[in-house]
Amino acid sequence: DAGSCNGCESELQALNNPFYNLHRLGIFFTPSPRFADLLLVTGPVTHAMLGPLRATWEAMAEPRWVMAVGTCAVSGGIAGGGYACGNGLDGVLPVDLYLPGCPPNPAAIIVALLTFQGRLPQRVLGGRHAE
Ligand code: SF4
Image (cartoon, rainbow, N blue to C red; front, side, top):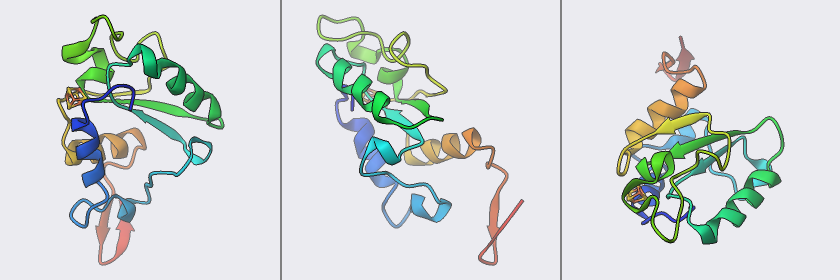
């Protein structure tokens, strides 16, 4: 959360509910950036959150990736360029994946994550993964 309105977090929280159930795909939120492969960022990157955001990035082991979730993280959104923030992640961190939307819904987040991993064609048939 780099200054989000909490709308994007609301959608992200839904990923762990029984309907979307992100864990079934082997993708987990980690308790620390030290265990994470992907830094998922929301918000327009406020001046106050710039330091913590960079510290979080630095705490991650390589290889590491960055995903901008929501229009604010992609381009600053409605608050972008205001007195308190920049215009999203460009120029702040190297972004590997952009997902616009205000907010993007959980299904879109899942599709983006699977596309990024090259797993979009993957299906679960009879309890087994199939291509
Ligand atoms: S993209 Fe929309 S929902 Fe997400 S933090 Fe920005 S204003 Fe809030």
